[in-house]
Image (cartoon, rainbow, N blue to C red; front, side, top):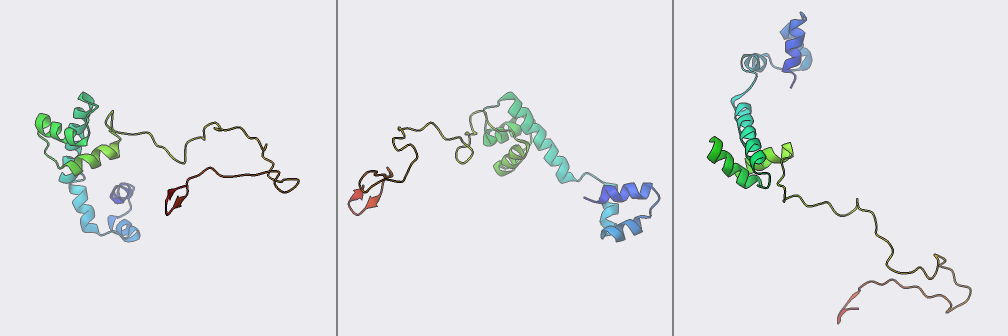
Length: 145
């Protein structure tokens, strides 16, 4: 939001008209913002976040649905479950039981499960001296091979 910048420039003596023209902002929304810099929606969002935080601090194992119910019951802040999910996920308030550990590309491989009999040399001296295979499952018409 550029309105605080326009306010600072106005305090330094630069006219609001010039600042709004350079920043390509309309003046009327700036003056509306200057009159009430915090909107009713932002204030409601802050009250809801406070209620959810208090409920999460009391019961950290609750998920967002139970936190929304608790905020409505204890603090009188009614909200949809989706709103509670958005607020809790943005602030990182997770259930003590809900977040699973990430698996996949970021994990280190485990130890090898077999001995390396070839010693990483994949070239044979003569035919039928060195055989290599990949132990995987292949789907066939009769089942897995």
